[in-house]
Image 1 (cartoon, rainbow, N blue to C red):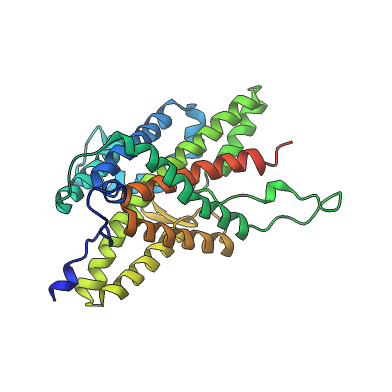
Image 2: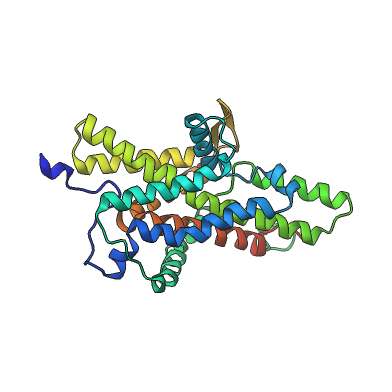
Length: 307
């Protein structure tokens, strides 16, 4: 019976003591590595053009869920906006304490972690391109409409459409379209970074641990089956929340259901879950954030329908 509980709820593999893989999988490394992402997201939502933020609802849904939960637990707080990032740090500190691992860290590991995250994001970029279906040739034979070929970016549901409308309004009002486009691109990047942190916190770190408790401790399934079910359920819910979201006490459809998108995000959810189990929260959230950044920039540069 004791063997059943010897596994860590946050990581399945133990690496050689003080090796790069062991050091960078520690929760303390996740705090140090993700702190710039957290600050970028928080400052970005404040400094970007207010109209773009208001119309695009740049706060990711996972962030809003966490914020609403913390407001419910501590009503009347005037610092509700800072509660989610503090929650991330507190949860990681708790995991560090529970893990019994060293608290030391080396700043020299940060750049290799960033490179690792970028490399780990590449398979998802390739998969997204593979699952996309470009439009039929228009005009000259062999000429494709690039606007139909897009990489799936983890934006806030409805964010792209809202940014498009904000662009139109700004241009009609006599604004500089180039400046507005750069603001909308930055807003999308900021949103993607936030999604990388808070979606991984909700759907991987919190949800998978809760599902493991449900399947393994309450339903008494084997450890292997518990992992499989936890990964599949969390990945499916991760994918579904990009189409149907629960906010303000009600469900709402945020995007037309598309099987290719759903399958891609489900596979991405499984990929992130496996990565979380092997490399811990820091690398997983970083990979998610870098995927969103790369996808957003590639969409803007290569697959934009703009003339």
